[in-house]
Structure formats: structure tokens, C-alpha cells
Image (cartoon, rainbow, N blue to C red):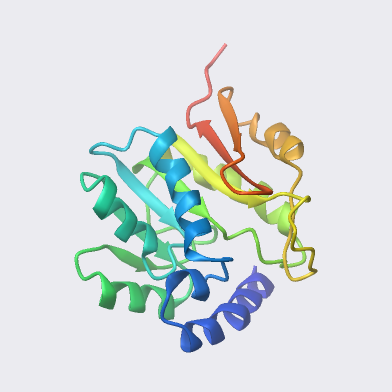
Length: 205
């Protein structure tokens, strides 16, 4: 875990100091691809009056997007980098942004949010990304009452670099069925990226 934090800090803090745009700070290809990932959430999950946790919120780009498209959402963002949440709070004083590590010592209670959303935190190669995702899944489901949704890079991505990590969607669907029996994999919104959308409650019996 400490190695992951160090890698994240060493990768993103220089970008935070260099850029002002969120997509550049978060190392997305462009603003359009970032918005496409947000639109998968908007178009596939009922958001009206829901409580949403944005894991790895960066400088609050999702908060801005939801304010424009579904302002009834009760939004909370969390990020392990204080520079990210500090910048987010300065740009969007009406938002709630918390510095913390939800995977180690979560500040939130069980089923505190209707929706847990996560965009991009598994993209940077940290040396143990599959292990990290498998450890993250029960944390996501612990905090969500209704829906868990997150995106990943597909192995067919045009960028092939050891800096990034790529998941096979079939593997991820297999892992997540331990926690949910209603799972959808959304593809095609941008090339070689996919989003997993899962009901947060697994049916009993």
C-alpha cells in the first residue's frame, strides 16, 4: 500500500504543479475522453437525489459535470493526495472533498452512499494492479447501497506502455460476480476502455 501511494504521489504531484486542467492532471488523453467516461455514469445509472462517492476525485471534474447535468446528486469526493482535494475545494467551494485512503482507513460507514464511482485509479501501473482491484472491490461494495461503477483500460488500447495497466474485461467480470449477480460491461464509448456497472447487493439464496 505504501508503494502504491508513493507511485501515485510521484506520478501525479508533478502534473498537479504543471497543469490547471483536470484531464491533464489526471493523465487522460483529452477532455472529451474524460467526459465520455462521465457520460457512461450519467446514461446508465439513476442519479436523481442519490448520494454518490467519487473515489479518486482528483480536482473535482465529476462534481462540475454533475452540477451541469444532474445537480440533485449529493456528491462527495475522496482522494489520497491533499493537493488534489485542496485544488478541488478551491475551484468548487460548494463541493465536499476529503483527503483520505478509503482502502486503508475509510472515513465512511457501511452502505453510506447509494453509488460508488471510480474513474481512472487503476490505470497507472503500480506493480500489483490486479491485486489492488481485487482488494478494492469489497471496499466499493461495502460503501455502496445500490451501484458500483468503475472504468478500466482494455489491452487493445492504442497506448501500449509499461506506465499503464490494462485489464481483460472477462477477468474483471469473473472477479466481481463474488459481490454482485447483476453486472454489465459497457464498451464502445471510447476505443479500448470499458466500464463495469454492478448492483451493490447480491441476491441471497
